[in-house]
Length: 249
Length: 233
Ligand SMILES: Nc1ncnc2c1ncn2[C@@H]1O[C@H](COP(=O)(O)OP(=O)(O)OP(=O)(O)O)[C@@H](O)[C@H]1O
Ligand SMILES: [Mg+2]
Image 1: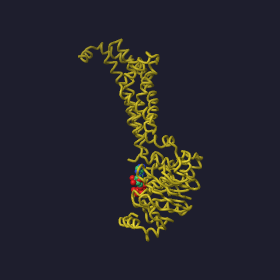
Image 2: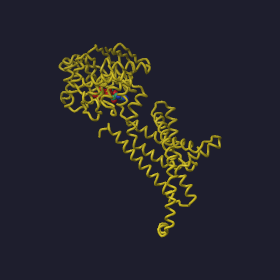
Image 3: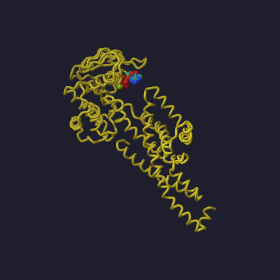
Image 4: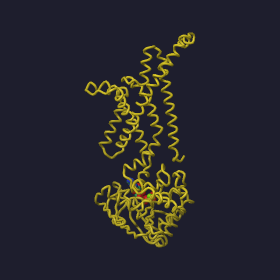
């Protein structure tokens, strides 16, 4: 489903991604962990071309983007459609209701039939457990509810891959579970997902593979059990110790 | 002195009452026929110009940025009255003659365009980057992002400063009297020239300006409330 080869990204002089290679099968859930500044967010944003990679190729769902060549707007749009992003700070549109947030992609952008799109949007709201919040504005929702709307908004685009950037790290601890549950359900239903998170429970319960990133490289990869319980690399061990100490993973 | 003489002189008092009564209607007429249309038309055209200018300022195209900067700088750096005089008295000397009303509309629109563009630019820049990214990720084009996501939010932020711009504009239209637009202040001048009751006539004009601006500030309050619907406090 995803095939990434030699992905590079620099901001000016600063090289943030130093050659990432990764293959993800359809239906797999990949969890990415790593210290702050290691390039996790940049990596996800490159897959959605919110950041234009400096070099490398990415294939998602059969569409290939070769970043050593210039891309037209149209090509970028087409490639971007393959995946959808869920943001750390939800980034819902505050002037639209939950329902309208979800409809914006299908109706405004994809020009789908409004009545059908609405039916589907309501089904998505139901799926994330918010069928009674369709007409609420984001500020009337808790953080966890907002993030679930964010997930529904991304799903409404019918992407082949879902990208999550620390979707629970801005949430109060008691709200984390409801969002992770929605994500676990998605993983179980066979959605292909790349998730940046330090939620150990989620990684252990839902990840097929865990990647440890440091300084723009994938330093270690393996099953959750391998990476968390038998890490091979010194840097991985140090990082795991650090976050297990503060109990945030 | 003046007040004393009025109250000690019932005939004069009566005369003032008559003048006030008979001049009230022409003043209101002038306000409805010229002051308000001039304000509204100039504001709408000006806002349009302001959005275009603000977008030029934040665009990545150097030439557009530069044109917008020069325009704003010239308008802000020169007196409104001088601009109106150039349009109405100056341009005819190079063969461009514009009637009073259109000349005033052009002058005031250019003014609103420059001042409001700074307001709108600041409002657009105040919208968090995450909103642009969310729009990007759902596949919106630049113009869709502006229309559906950025400008609706920016306009909420802009209501108070733009209301100020509009209220200033209503008062500034009195300057159009000097390029022969028969708006309310000019009518007051004309009537006063026939009966020499300057204080009365200008006082009446002032009262009507104040009432208009007061009503506008009420509208502003309602607009702000409406926009606050979706804002957490
Ligand atoms: N737009 C940008 N311009 C310049 N540098 C950037 C930009 N975005 C990110 N960086 C830099 O790239 C590096 C990687 O950032 P990134 O946000 O990908 O890290 P991260 O792993 O997601 O960290 P965190 O856990 O704190 O979210 C950092 O050094 C950051 O300062
Ligand atoms: Mg990050």
